[in-house]
Length: 247
Image 1 (cartoon, rainbow, N blue to C red):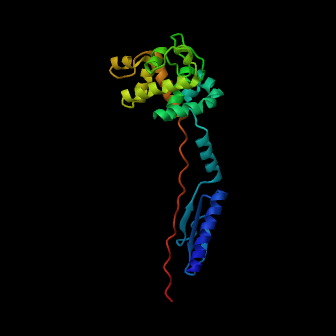
Image 2 (image 1 turned 60 degrees about the horizontal axis):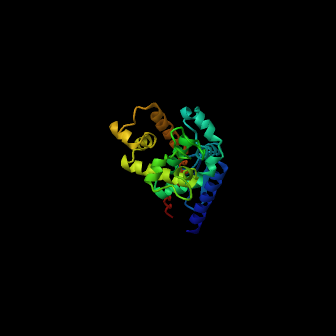
Image 3 (image 1 turned 90 degrees about the vertical axis):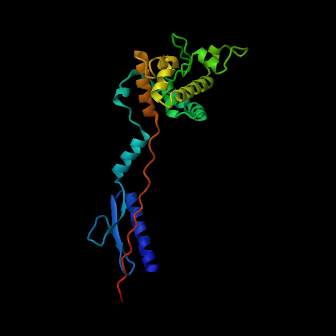
C-alpha cells in the first residue's frame, strides 16, 4: 500500500510542477510495484492523462483578458468612451454606485453604464432640459421619491449630491426594470424618454434618435462594465489503478 501511495504522491508532485512550469499535459501510470512513471506526452498505451493545463503564454493571455475587458469596437470609437475611459471619477464613484445598485438589486454594471452615458461621470452636469447630476435625474422624478425643497436646499441643489443622485437614479431604474418585466433595453428607453413614451409605442424603444442612441450606448457600456468571468476550475484526472500481477 505504501509504495502505491508514494507513487501517487509522486505523480501529484510532477503535475504541480508541470502546472507551474507551464507544461500543457502530464501523462503517467503507476506500475505493479507502486512506482510512478511520468512524461509530458503519451509514450505508450500504459500512460494515461493525469493533468492537462495551459501553457504559460495561454495562461497569461487568459489573465489579461479577464482583467482588461475589451470594448466593442463601435463603442471604443465614440467620443464618450474616450472621455470616460481615463476619467478619474470612474473609480472614485465606483463604491457609491456599487452600494446603491446592490441595495436596489440592480446590476452594478448597468447603473455604471447609465452614469457613463448620462453624464460621463460629471457630478455637476446639468442638461438644457434640467436633468441634474451623475444620473441626470430631473427634479420631478426626485420629488416622486420624496425629495423636497426645505431649509437644507432646493431639490435641484440636492440632486448635485452624488450619493443622493445615484440613490434616486438607481431606485428609478429599478422601478423601470420591474415595470418592463426586466427588459433592460425598454427600461433604458424609459429612463431616457419616460415610461409613458415607451408604453405609447407599444412597449418598444421609441423612434427618437436621441433615445435610440442612448439605449445603444448604454447597452454597450453595460457589456463593457460587466465583471470578467472567473477563471476555470482546475481539472482533476485520476489514473485508473492497474491490476496487480498474480504472483
